Image (cartoon, rainbow, N blue to C red; front, side):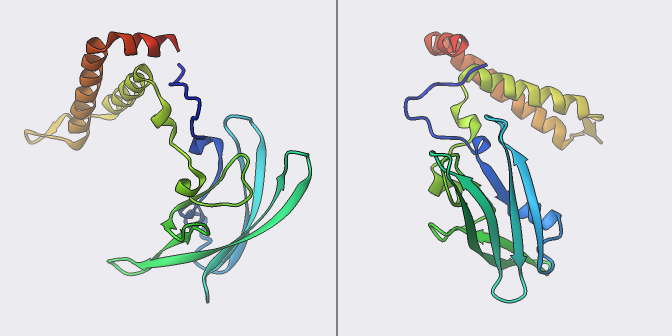
Length: 198
């Protein structure tokens, strides 16, 4: 099911290589100075990429990304990016780390390398959009229906002591979304049929 097509459509986050601070934290890389390598496959091209990550949290916390980028004339260049880490105190003790974007100096959780980019920067600096922002109306309806059906299958008890459970309330909310989008599709049949044709 295709999405809307734009002449100046932004690239999506799924088309880019990304490094998440939460992924580094899950691997235990933010507890002490360490180095590790990450690899991923781009969804649109199937191209495999890898990056070496060196984390230093003891003094002057920062992360180094070491990777190779191939330019248009098939000339490869090695890049060594240093990205500062910011931290915030948690309410119940401990700290939470964030990347500081080298372009806008904002605190972000995920950095992206655009398909024709050379450096890891945030989503806003890369001018990226999410895939759901490019979806047509019918794709949105199908995606919400699928989420609703999965949630209904997981729901064992619809209520507890006469009060609806959170999953039940979420299913009701998703039902309302589907109904409102279907109502909108009936009110705007041209737009709906155009999204069916794409």
